[in-house]
Amino acid sequence: MLMLVLAIAGCSRYGYVSLNYPTAPVAYLPEDVNSIAAVNRSLTREEDRDEKIVEAIITTEVAGSDRLASDESIKGVYDAILGLENVLLIIPATVKMYGTGTRELPELLDWNLVADICKTEGADALLVLETFDSNTDLLVSTATSQAAAILSTGSPVPALPGQIKMNVACYWRLYNPKTKLIIDQYQHNSYTSFDIQGGIIPPHALPETAYEAGRAYVERFLPSYYVVRRDLYKRTSGSAKHQFMAGYRRAEVANWQGAIEVWSELSDHGKRKTAGRACLNIAVANEVLGDTENALVWAKRSYEFYDDKLGRDYSKILLRRRNIEGF
Image (cartoon, rainbow, N blue to C red; front, side, top):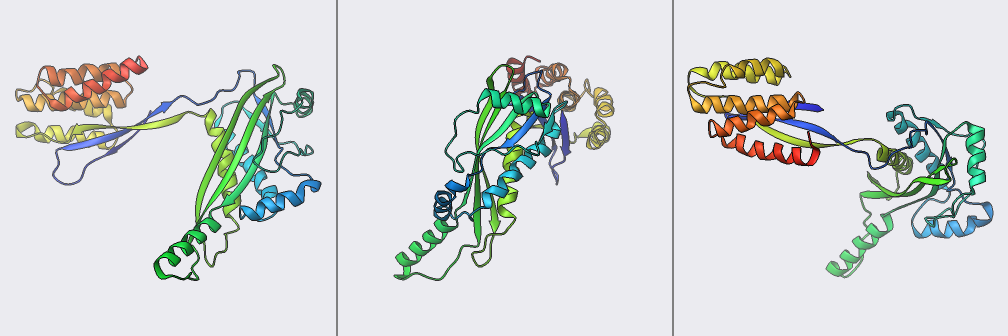
């Protein structure tokens, strides 16, 4: 569990800590899949080239650019898969495959072909970029601007948009030759905005968007995180204020165990407000250190014994977490 302490500026008595909690991956690899061969099937045959060029003009895609950019998606997969433990990605040097060249999904590969590729490359599974297609909103943006100008002034104006949005649509299939089953199949759209001048699309726009599309696919197999915020007290009043702040300073430099030691001495202080705040801070410190059950004990104590409202709200949050996650 990762954490970052951020103190609220000014005279506020509150600070907070942001915690990153992991969530399960969307998809999983079988345990016996340790190496994956990746091939690009989104290329177009020469005899289909004319039809592809017509489609390219309609979507403002530069003719032939998808042929090179689709390989960038494979590179994105290669780099991102380094985040998976004990998984190796193999990019065959000699395998070239043709598909529809558009967003139209081709039929499944023949399982004998899948098995042959995996055997040749020493891979346990075959990842195929089945389709790859790109376009921008350049024509749409220009038409929208011209229509707005006509409505407002009665005539078009020579205006070009200052920014374009690049779109890359990919469809991936992960084949298991042993079971003859599809491990995973996923269609994904990646969008990236770029500044332009004179209506010229930056040459790096499509490759960068394609690369991120490849990385986005692998992220399905990686744990993600959600961020939660936990409020705690920076200070108290009276004779304990300096000691209380000493504990908070330790928390600011991630010395949470040291902070607990300081606040523990104040957890049964004669002044109820100080004791309640100390208990609440101990609760937060325990959650940061991964002891969520003990955090709940201290959060309850801050409210049940000392009527600290922050402790009441925090207890409810932790109880919900326990019901969902079963810590």
